[in-house]
Image (cartoon, rainbow, N blue to C red):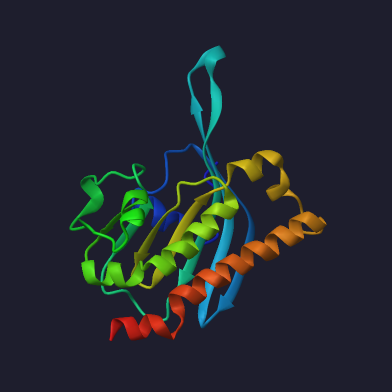
Length: 206
């Protein structure tokens, strides 16, 4: 079943080649909020694919994690794509995206960044802001952080396999541990928005 995506995040990431193939998709626990003048949504997503045939047929999970979409108060000048090193390869749909050299060698080794606007990409992805993205990724433990800065949206996908398998992420919000985890997640998202959307971002651009 191709369940309706409750936020634009899935289609944006899929269109950029940042989501794997799937036969079925499921969305749960949509969280909507506003921080620093920016609307954001956070939703859990699970993609599965049927593999093999007959007795060997099995359902494989191709993605399990969270999709975050933040609406910027203004459009980006270019289009920037970020992914953990070795996860995304520049393909036919990349258009005029060019590889970006990051300021930090450590970040350069850890991430692949492509953009249509080299200056904007480096302004956006300062070591401080990258650290906030990494903190969010670290919380979900699944790795494979990837995302897109395009038009007026910052869209991020984070895998969270450990938590899904433990079942904790699927617990209802009335469960105390689930409630606390959700508050932490929203706090990390707000911290990320503060890092990307405070006044310093505008100062950087001027």
